[in-house]
Length: 91
Image (cartoon, rainbow, N blue to C red; front, side):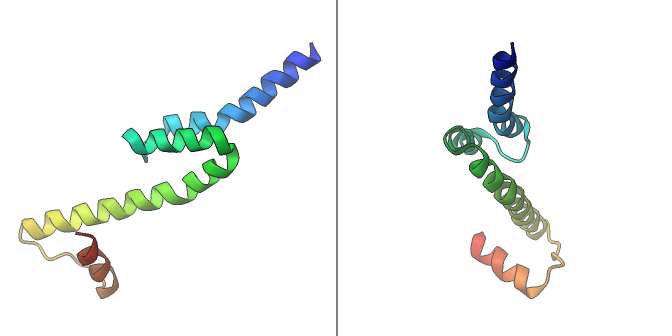
């Protein structure tokens, strides 16, 4: 009985990061699939990398889309020159 409980605990420990990525809304499509495969092979290391990288990428994509939208509708985006250079290079 103790072996079964230990095996269930180990399984939950292994599936924790995978469950987090499946439920997370910061990534989608092939990007999410790639993170899932990486997490299956490298478990916690890939999961910690996912937590560090993906929300930052999402914010950056949102900023670029917002600037493009504002520029097409005749509004001048209020950004510092540093951000404007980053966005000009990305678009």
